[in-house]
Image (cartoon, rainbow, N blue to C red; front, top):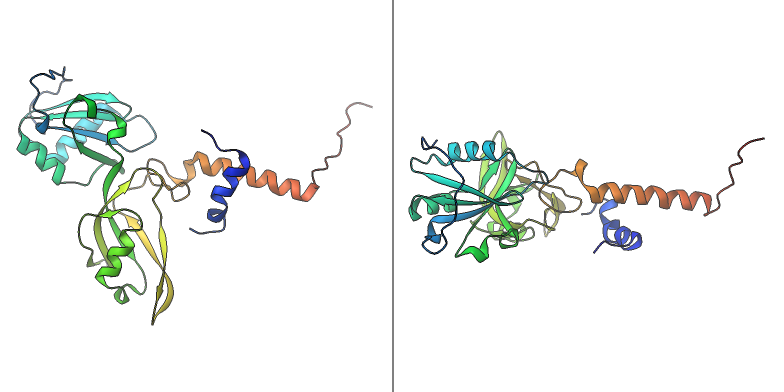
Length: 252
């Protein structure tokens, strides 16, 4: 249900103030559910707010997975694909080998136990690698870094200090909700250093919006941001004019 203009402005008012391959030929499968080994299948959802090119997606994924046995893709919905592998071992390699991306868009992967799981609602989280940057990174302990990562998702691995390109940062693998929890920074209060910000960088991901906190699009393409900006301008105009608009006379 759409929010009223007043509720919408209230929801985002704090944000406005700065808070916050395979050599085998590919084919589409016809499911034989009665004899299907669901342990050798995975459900994939490309988290992006536009329709992906299926042929290009398959080509990119097979190259990344380096499969030597047959892999069969079936489109099951909007950017939703059922992938049937030759063996359970192949499915496990892909499931445990992520996070996976398609041209900077994250790919959510889930196991399926039957046809009842083949829908977009079955996939609500996606795994990402996240970096935590700060000028005071060495003052943050590993348990504190774990707590920081928990602010945006569920850590899958323990954070570790990484040194790359002259910078030190914590790096960890997390499972994040596809909708409503992405952020680019978090305030920290340290007993000796004081208050500072920790910035989150999502590796290989460009389709993330820190305004509506959803994956799938960038800030500049956020419909919520466009609507919020329009309402803020309208609100400012009303304050200036006091809701009094002079009539515009037509003709002599």
